Length: 243
Image (tube, rainbow, N blue to C red; front, side, top):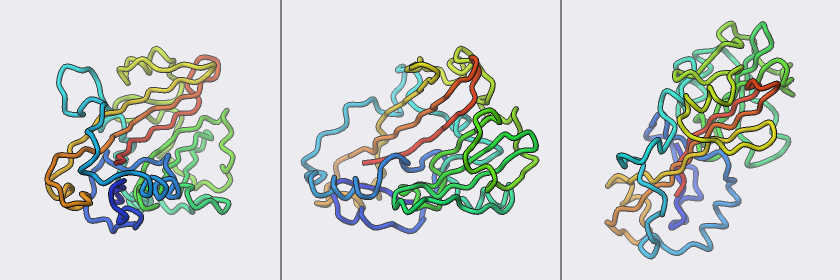
């Protein structure tokens, strides 16, 4: 997996996968160009303050992140490799990125009823480890459906281990995710942000000045939903760390 740190130029390199933490993949939404820009502007680790967001391990503050059950589908949790996905669901070609260096490496599977399940591995996953997955109903007309591999494991009733699935209402999803969403027109966004404490090894690895302070990773997790006639027709789920 790949970890990014603002305090060291070493973050610009894609590191080999020496540790895999299911549910602790890296953010899909930051491009490599953006990271390099931050590297140039951000002071070393020792001069930065701790993040203002709550600590992920804090008690009594409600739900602070998506759970493993929220980010697991068909036994595959965000953070696993695309290789593991293919071993579970069968061979699948990567969708075209149209020349974008920051676009995720995405594969997709389509069910007999037209439901599509996608797995994306973004830059922070080294384009090999899953950083998000999504469900598309037949009505949503996934744009690259002809390139998706067929799978009998995918269906309109497919759900995460916590029960997130297509067809649910906003009320039902809110009960599962346990957070009030930001609602706009026919969409709902359940966004979480908290701070994960670095391990001793990570402190030594990512501290530009060798500091032994206790810095944190920012952990972002979210569920983005689009509704059609009051029922979820497209669901995106991701969970990722950045620093």
